[in-house]
Image 1 (spheres, rainbow, N blue to C red):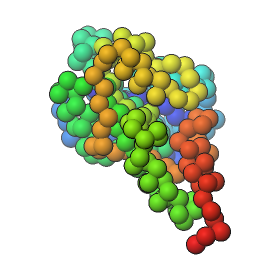
Image 2 (image 1 turned 45 degrees about the vertical axis):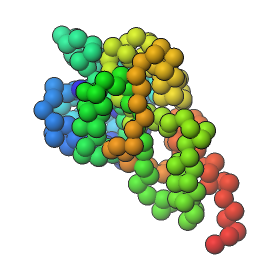
Image 3 (image 1 turned 180 degrees about the vertical axis):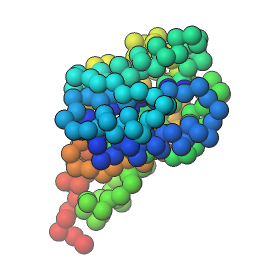
Length: 233
């Protein structure tokens, strides 16, 4: 099991993120490796991540400035770590540095893999809307329940799992600044791999206004909030 966390200037949240992953891993007896990719950081994200990782992983410094490239670099390090294992026996997990995974996150992905899934698209929940308009929570939850286009499953880099042979078979993450998660998912679908959307073990993420990826989750919340009639109570 390999977990990759891209991070850019995430000193406020990276330790909590890493520790949540370590707690989830501690519930399973697995050979696991965590990689934090500190991508164009101007703060002490890398140092904080190293402290939180202990001996459970590594920090890789990147200058790409693109989340897709950062995820790809992290996955490459995981695959180097597990080069002695067959690709079909390695599961690659992605989450985000402003997120926290639940204790059963690893188990949920492991169960899906054991049932034959090549990839899993998990869901997310927002930890707090306290810095947002009062009615944004209801608007968000209603829109999220319908799906982004009414039927296609949500795909989040904050909760994404893929078997390494399928990952390698489609070329891995594209070097995109945003949308790398849906791009990988669609390539897996087109290649005929068994992909599974899942509501189990949603990842908790932030409702911040300024995200790291252009047109990412923060921008989505901003658009929802902008569409509210804030003159109504």
